[in-house]
Length: 323
Image (cartoon, rainbow, N blue to C red; front, side, top):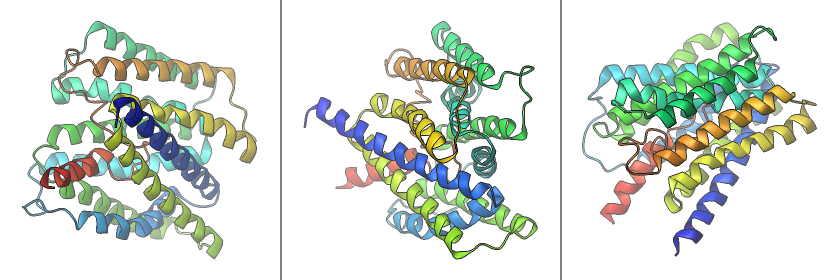
């Protein structure tokens, strides 16, 4: 199969994945009007866990479940919990387009964090792209002109902690088994959110619990689709497809939630997306970035509850080599 056809398939898989993720976020927003994000994440993880466990059972890598880098593993697990709660809360209280615009700052933050964590060297061009992207975030937030809410803080927190979790995987991913990197954040979610659940729990009618099932199913199917995208297409083609979620945000926001994002949100989002695209394109040039922190993170949206795509791809690539 030609590279062009493979990239086209990769792009289509990615577009399908992010459309499903957007549907996932719509259900999160609907349920967020009634329940704490802690309760929503706990039960959606409870339904997702058996599916992911079946995938992990196929891991034939020798070793145990003891992390070789325990403190980095603890940090990443904590970031995963914080990302999930923060992102779900942001989706619950902010317009979809505004939430996505802020979360799209994740590639910029990954690039920035790669400097101290991975020893990445940032040239003037990527440095200016980061500055431009952060200006875009300020355009969306408009500090001083608009009152910043807890929802804005939650979206920013999710972007930062998701970026830190991604860069941690890049730091220790070669030394740790994929199953170790996947299982600890999942267990951290169960333990931390399970302990907090009695303080926020609200009884759920069966239709709302069914919506939890939709969240779990959408997350799992979207994860499989983005894995397929990265397996058949180049990362530089697949990664930018995440920005298609702004289209779905506009459609779903208008039709379901009667949201009309203002001009500042669209302008800020355009600046952030442009900066992110530039960083991805720069990283794709072999002589520019040694670590390629954004391209090789290969993550889904910054929701915190879906397993890292890069880790599942690592397992698939190992299996393909064995075959």
